Image 1: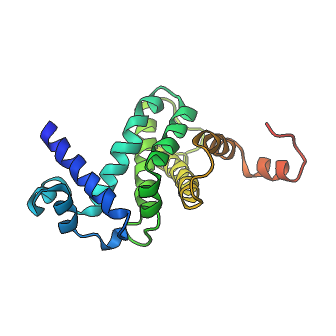
Image 2: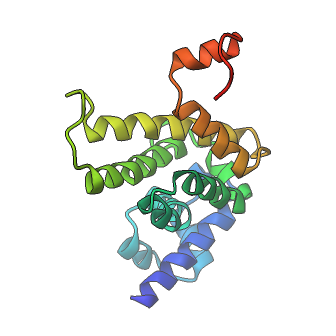
Image 3: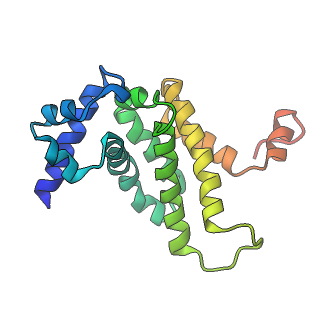
Amino acid sequence: MEERKDIERELAASIKSLALTIPFEKITIRQITDGAGVIRVTFYNHFQDKYDLLEWILNTEVFNPVRILRDNNMVREAVVLIFSKLLEDKAFYSRVAQMEGQNSFRELVYQATYRFIYERLREHTVVKPRHPWMKEEYIASYYAQSMTFVLMEWIRAGMTVSPEEMAVAYEYIATRSLGDVIDELEGRKPEK
C-alpha cells in the first residue's frame, strides 16, 4: 500500500513540475511517466487520465487534511486551511486554474467541494428539513458553487488576500441573505 502511495506522489510531483512550464492541456502521459521514472502502464494502474491525477492531487493535498476540522464543526478553520493548502502550492494552482472547458479545474474544485460538503450533510443530518426542497444534494450544490466561485476568483486574482481574510469574507457572504448584503452596502443596516 505504501508503494502505491509513493508512486502516486511521484506522478503528482511530475505533473506539478510539468504544469509550471507547459499548459496542463498539453501535458502528455508520457511526459508525466518520464518525470516520475515509471512506465505508462504504471500510470494507468493508478489513474484513468491526467485529470484523474489532478483530482487526486486536489483531494489529497487540499480536502483530505481538512476533513477532521469539518467533522468537528470547525468551519472557519476548515475554510482557512483550504485556502492555505492552495496557497502552499500557489504556482501550480495558479496554472491549472487557467484550464477551461470540459475537465476544467473549476469543475474539479466544484466536484471536490460538493463531495466534501455532501458527505458531512449525509453523515450528520438527523432532522427533516423545514422545506421539502432543502435536500442534502441541493444544499451541498449551493454551497459548493459559492465556495468554488470564491476559490477560483481568489486564485485568478493572484492569491494576494490572506487565507484568514478570505475565510472571513466567505463566512460573511455565506451567512447573510442577499437582502442583508444589499441593505448593508446601501447603508441601511450596520454590519453584523
